[in-house]
Image 1 (cartoon, rainbow, N blue to C red):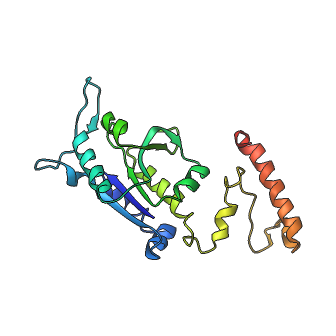
Image 2 (cartoon, rainbow, N blue to C red):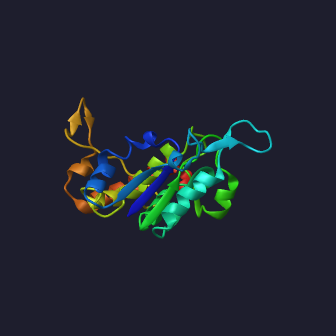
Image 3 (spheres, helix red, strand yellow):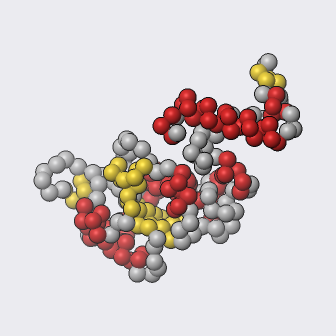
Length: 223
């Protein structure tokens, strides 16, 4: 998989993309991630990429030209399954969406910044808009990092134990059941006996029951 992230502030992505699971996936050659500095497509001495918006509203808007040039430069070299824009208007990122995106070969993620981007780019070049929640961030870089992390960890080989992802919350539409580790008794707080029984059938039944009960109590809208 290849993920190209277009950003006005590329340094914000330095840490999230170079640690933990994403780092290991890149080192294994499972994913290639490139961060493109939008200012490289800006003009003038200051590589300007923004301007005042028409209509007199406060806030700067990322211009058409640098966005168009960055995206068309990338798409001239390969086909992309998705050209994504991180936007409050987009579909909310969830596990089924992450599963779908993880099967793609090439993805562009365009990070919004300032007041936003010229709407003509959204109309003509963006193929999918994604939001990570009903709130506003200073820019789309953190959202791009969240999308990338959610997708990359699903690539076969990215996790040390690939079956781990199958038991994550939301994979089956439910929250995950409680998990425990040693010691079995800490300060009098004990691990449920069923998990110590060694009986896979009983453990599986307990986990399914707990997942359902937790979902009913904490996230009933998922049912």
